[in-house]
Amino acid sequence: MSAFVFADTPVVIQGITGREGMFWTKHMKAYGTNIVAGVTPGKSGESVEGIPVYDTVNEAMRHHTIELSVAFVPAAGVKDAVFESLDAGIRKMVTLADGIPLHDQMEIRSHVLDVGATVIGANCAGTATIGEAMLGFLPVWLDYVYKPGNVGVITRSGSLTNETTSHLVAAGMGMTTVFGVGGDPVPATRMTEVMKLLEEDPQTEALVIVGELGGTMEEEAAQLIESGGFTKPAAAFISGASAPPEKKMGHTGAIIMGNKGTVKGKVEALESVGVRCAPRPSLVPEALRESIKAKL
Image 1: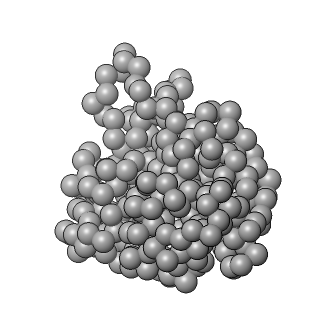
Image 2: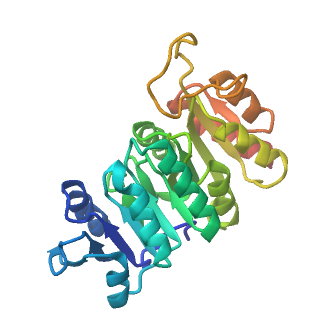
C-alpha cells in the first residue's frame, strides 16, 4: 500500500535532461519507479535511460498516461513547471528545488488549493513508497537506512530523515511512505494534509515526524491530533534545540513568530496530545514504542 505513489504509477520527469535530472532518473528507475516520459523544452526526440523526452507535459500526455510529475528544474522555473503539470491535468507532483521566490511559493500554494492537487515540496528530498517507488533524492537503495514496514514518516529535513530512518531500521522497524514536505515557509502541501493521507492508508500504523525550529507546521499537527483528525501513534524529533535564540538563522523556514516556532513550543504542543518527542534521532524508536504502547 501507499499514501501517494505506487510501483505502477506512471511518472513524468520535468527537467530530465539536466545533470540532476539524468542522475536521479537513473536511481529512481533502478528502484522500480515507473517513469514513462521526460520533459525538457527543445529536447523532444531525445531519450534518457531509454525514456522518451518531449518538449512539454501536454505533448508527453498525448503519448502516455501520466498521473504524477517530478520537477528537476531550477528554483526560478518551478512555478512554471508546477502550473504546466497542473494545467495539463496532473494532480500529484513533487518539487525539489531550494530557493524558490516567496511570491512564487504563494502562487503555487494558491493554485494547488484551487485545483485540488497534492504537490510535495519544495526544498525537500522528495517522497518514496519504500520497496516500490522513489521520487526525488532519497537513498532508498540503502537497506540499512530504508526498508518496508508500517511506519509513515513526514519530514522537513533531508539528512536528518536518513539518520532517523536508519535508527528505525536498526530497531527492527520499517516504513510505508516517506514524505519530505520541505523547510520553506510556504510549502505546496502542509504537514497536516500529508498526515490525513497517512491516516487513510491502512498499512501505515504509526507516524514519525522529523521537524525543526521555525514555522508552525508541528503545532498544526498537534491541533489535528487534538481534533481527532489523526488517530495513530506518533513520535517526533524536532531539530534546533541548541540554536541560540538571539541569532538569525539562515534557513528560510526557520522563522519564529511570537511564541510559535520554537523547539520548546513545538515539543510542548506535540507532547500535550500524546506524541512522544525524542531529544535526538537515535531515541525516536524508543519514543515511538512508548507512543504505541500508550495507544493500546
